[in-house]
Length: 167
Image (cartoon, rainbow, N blue to C red; front, side, top):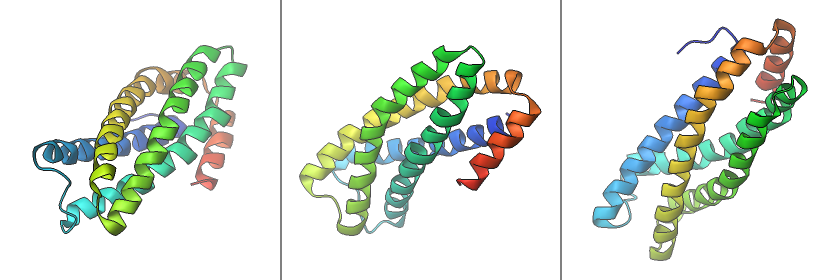
């Protein structure tokens, strides 16, 4: 999909990257259910763990914060606080899970998975994937169209500049 609002487009592009990352994660988890921890000598596993660590930190720190600090406050000022309140609640639930998954992924990339870490990772990573995919879908279906339809050009330019500067 293509948006005329640059903020909607940037968020949409990041959502696409998050979905792709969650799909890769789910593939690794599915293989792990059959045979235990992944083979750390496999370059795809190492790359996924690195991407997962960096991607979750960017999503949780930058993407969520931008939405909460700028997009949701903009919508609230425009009289539409409900969507921001709902999505902020989801962010609050996802943050600790994503942070822990990123931590385990970073440690595993360096040292491999200990059995207890693998068990924790499998559980939390599946929960994270389920939550992130549902969250992205809500934002794609509800948040981005509202931004696209309601944001004036001046606000878009100001917020887009803020978003780019904090990339």
